[in-house]
Length: 310
Image (cartoon, rainbow, N blue to C red; front, top):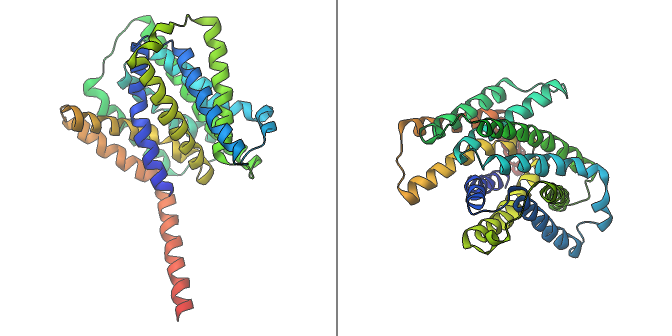
């Protein structure tokens, strides 16, 4: 179930960079569209969780859940949405692939948690693979807003890594609460902060919401990207660790490239093939210890079953 959830999450997130760009190009204000997306998605999930008894309403006001919303939603997507006005979606994917690297650095420097050698090598390989994959279609400019946009995405990934680590602490602190409900709360917190930011920094062109391109992108990102994709991310953090789910940032550009080749006949270059292979090898190395542990547990289970049968 973990690998199935991871695969579905990567498939979903493989389309979100492009859909954010579609919405921005349609005229949607960055902070407003991001805020509506996450507040609406979080509210719908939270209402469902209340109706099914999976969460208490009072949990919405717990201040210790706010940092997760600031990290995973507000800090990450305020920077990404703003930057995609000036940075191509391909470059945004490369810069966003620094998320797992930032997470390893925070774990090592701040939390004093030593990463395995295979995880570090896999992390570097995954990032290099994303670069190879996207490089042929990469558009690079040198104006000031482009440079600031690149820096903003990197800052956003630092928020993302911090939010993923804090999310694990929140899940431990509230073991009786559904991970989906906790994800809904952090999305609502982040969505409200994004709307407050929008109120003071941008004009909202309501006519963009009347276009099929604008409303389609917003609906897709709300329902598929946030309600499904981010709920799966939070569930995977609960089931595994904060690092493993963040590696979707390596896989999703590969999925986006594959969809482009299959549906639009985009050219397959040797750089893309090399990048895809490098990403897969990197992901396997990142999760080498987990794979070994799963195989060992399976062998132990078979041995116990054979002993009981004998």
